[in-house]
Length: 300
Image (cartoon, rainbow, N blue to C red; front, side):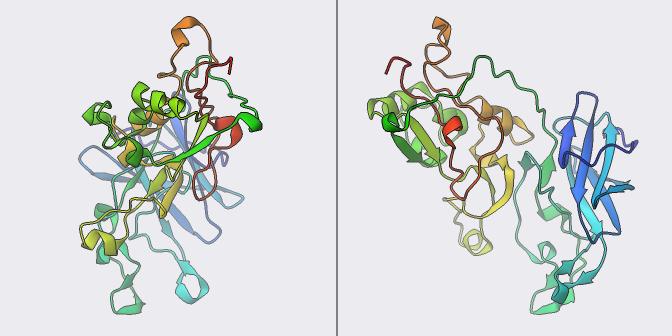
């Protein structure tokens, strides 16, 4: 387990921010009277650390020695008054709403819920930790190399809406272990197909972390479309070919810079050129114009 010494840290930015020597944690809550940061090791053993600093309703602390790959969550103490919209219950492990990576899935069952089945007015104090995903500290550093916005003119733009898994899952030219993943989406065979259609940019359907609803899980089905988001800042871990302890973030960023044809010819404008500064928004994770993937050579 990483070091658990706690320094005051900063209230901004929210979420977990690694600086090369440790990680700053910040969580907003207007009603909490105590917040515990929960760290999990590779065996799932939990270590709880109290965050004592509060500024502007942000509970925060800096943990030296805690770095990328560290799984964590929060337990929030405070009022439990459902009619007033308050459901603080430290028995429930909470995801960081600003998490940039998430590991694991939800195992639906009574412990996940704040109330007892059949008795919505009764508080359920079963520990949810073994049944819910964890937030993950990521490495924010990435070599963008010569990546630049494509700046495709609107009158030349052809947008192709795509599903990460659906576009590549059955593609015979994509290696089997890359099908249905971010790296598979950037495979030269896929790019060649899109360019052959005259496409200049792709608009990805939901790529932020989502869950499969309980009624689908009970029937052995999965949430294909992704419209049940639990982490708007985290790339969906099931679309990663490299792992879910932060690797999904690096893989997502690598879709363009590591697969752009023409890079070895010294032309940074050729091939797919994603520009991913910031986070996409909207229910379809629409890539704004400055984040569209360039599929046409610069002279077209």
